[in-house]
Image 1 (spheres, rainbow, N blue to C red):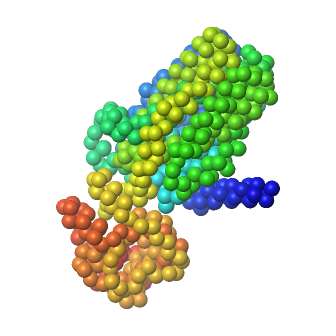
Image 2: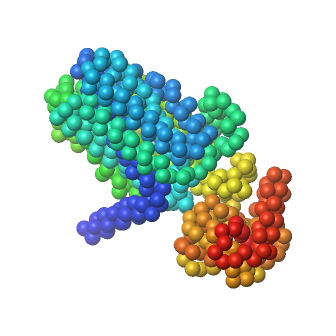
Image 3: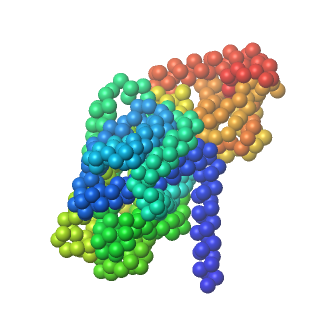
Length: 566
């Protein structure tokens, strides 16, 4: 009993640490709140439109309408994902939410006006296409918003909880609104939620686009092709994208099977489909404690395989026990498995995929996910016609465990080698001095960076100290002083320390932490190797050092805003 209590307390403590890590980061907090609204809206309008389609023509019409929404989304997703590599991802995220709000609002207006069903279906398809902007952009943005690798994993875990919670909340809200009003009210309400998400993310400054200026000169179609070519060359990323995409065949089938189960088997009424979907979300919430243990975990494949197995067993149970209570319990169990599987898989893909095309890789995944959902939507009515809901649930439940087991040994090899420093890479891309470096040079620098925490009021070093490190600020504010006078203040994205390294001289100034600060340091030899190996970087670095020395020589008075650093 004592062991059980201790384990429970440990899981609660882990969950609390994850939430605290995300809550302390303003940008991660705002992005997470917006993501919660996005997920609620996505699931609510999806269920509402399928119920509307089922009322128009039964399960076949619901499946066709699902495809009408998913095919354009699948085609648009890879193109949408290039936006985060070509433009500031934070701005792309906010505009994507705004586009969703407009499309959902237009669908609501058409439904309230009594427009013909094809018009409502078409507008809903536009909304579904706009939805594909969010996940690839957010996956590319998170490494740049995190300040430490463990904070990135914590954000992935917390966002996985958000998604699981909203799988519960979104359909539940849809069920209530469908019961008391109608489909138009669902779309109108969720349009307002999406607009709120756009407002929240508009306050995130975010990094520059990862592709830099070079990407701006290429066409969007070229960028899409680059994402597919990257997967063609990068076997590890290709396998993970395929595995993560396979789950959406099941999800696409479930979207139809929820309606069939609620209306055709369990006689739960229109709102029953929302409640069954919500039960799936309950499992995701229950899985919070399990995914909290992923933070700081070096190996992610064992929990990924365990999640797939739990998912499959739960669906097999639904296929043999079609009662309301059993369906709710087993769907919740499947939700636990899905949350663990998805969070572990996406985090592993972030660790594995090339950083400069991360958005496009996740865009391919988003497009594949939509196509897989369309395939699942087609598969479900066929399986129901062939052997009823029991066969359908058993068949789709076996898919993911089979794929995961077939890839088991390759996944273990990927897990053992996935050590790409994604947080450090994102930080270097945000620093003007290093942003233009090619990806191999950036990754070499990122691998050599070491994490450093500096308490408030502590000195990082003093004027006259030996210089052996180059620094990049991940979080916090620092002050630069020469001969007792303040020269400058620095924050996230600022780099310093190059003068002592380039000129082999003592530190020309002192640096003190005005707030608790997080930095990354780079050894002298690694920094000088990068300088000597890149002509443009060498010229920029020497130009920066010369400018700082000139300003330091002027002994800028305290209170000045001059840009000087040691």
